[in-house]
Length: 79
Image (cartoon, rainbow, N blue to C red; front, side):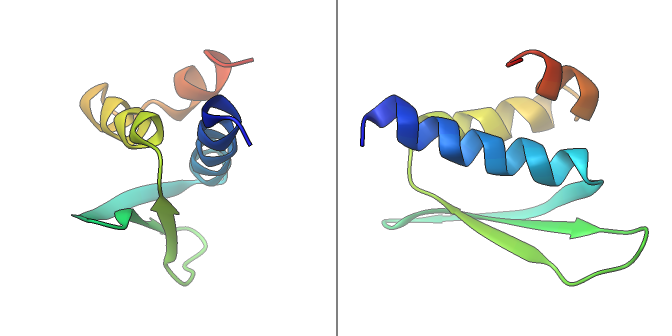
């Protein structure tokens, strides 16, 4: 699988969770990648954790956090 295809899969998972109303509650980076924890407040649910292996996906999460976390804009920019 190409590097872009790996990033695109991870980006789609991130954007899908955000589109479902999840918010990022934690990021833990180690040598294996970045573990990003998402939680949805309404309706309350279990936390979801994604392991991001690509640097571009980690940058995407950071860009979402820095931009003020506007889910609609993040999803539309890749349509």
